[in-house]
Amino acid sequence: MDRDQRVQRQTRWRLGQLSPRVEKLEIGYGKLCGGFHLPLLKQKPVLPPGSGRRPSRCARIARAPSTSSFPLARDTLSIVVSGGDPARSKHDASQQPARLPGGLCAAYNLASTTAALPTVTPILSFDIETVPDVAGIRLLTGFDNTITDHNVVEYALQRRRAEIDADFVAPHLQKVVAIAAVLGSDEGVALHSFGAPELDEAGTLAAFFALVEKHAPRLVSWAGSAQLPALHSRALMHGVAAPRYWEQDRHLDLAERLALASRESRVSLVDIARLSGLPGKAGLDKLAVWHAYENGRLDTILAKSETDAVYTCLVHLRFEHLAGRLSPDAYRAEAGRVRRALEAANSARWRDFLAAWPLDPLGASR
Image (tube, rainbow, N blue to C red):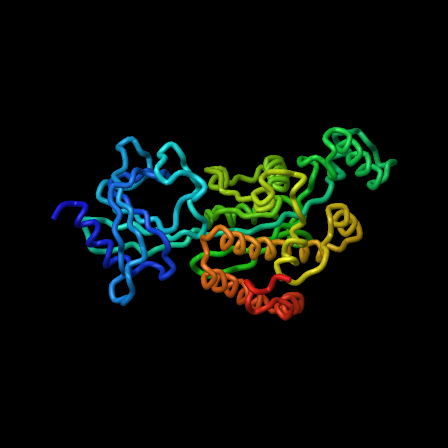
């Protein structure tokens, strides 16, 4: 029995240990070229043992070039389930698409009969709330205390509008006051929020990056491409280290992706969520967040951030279904995990949200 036959045989019975929601299987051995689409050498149906169904899953066997850099031992069989970007060529080794968020991965040592447990790439859907950094603006402009905070901020806003026609102050002058996130992993769905008054800005940034360092998730946001520059600048100012965050591009901006990077085509997160059947009402814009901060309504800002993080998570699931990476049943299962996390939070706000959220999320749009 040659090596290819042995790989095929071992894969057939070991596939049964993977998730039943496997849709596509990419297999390689030796030093697999991580993320690259390799030339297809063999393609055969693979049937999980004892399933009683017709073969419907496809195994792709490929020998990677010796120049690849994916850190696998020579005798390691790497299995990547539902990987690859369908918008790129399946046989173009010059492309390196991002691996599918939530894709299952497993690695096997061909010299043994022990299979590694499959893992799910964590997904962190997040929202960041910022306000103008009045002290920073005063430092850079030389304004003293005879000028009110309102006028200091108004000056910064007018200057920014004159520079690039933006509706808020420059990223480095945005103080981070709240970050909320929904973490989805193979352990379940967990809600996280950080911010004032419990944490100052440095503590808020450190807590968020600690979450990223621990789980190395793929980041998902709505208009996060406009939020993250503020996060980066403020982390630099406070000296908050985040090695794993800067390792590679881990971020998907749903608003930018859906609008094809067109600023004019971007829509409100709350609007798209409500049109998709999610409960809610118009949220606070950036200036309203600033006014809430001025009036000490920090709980309102944190609640707004938490709601937007949940919206982002649920819209992302819908996007994965739209892209064909989640079947209807898989979509409902993932939405159910979010529902259970909100139920476990046991707050009046989430109880109201759940009461207005239809049980069948795919059939919920207006």
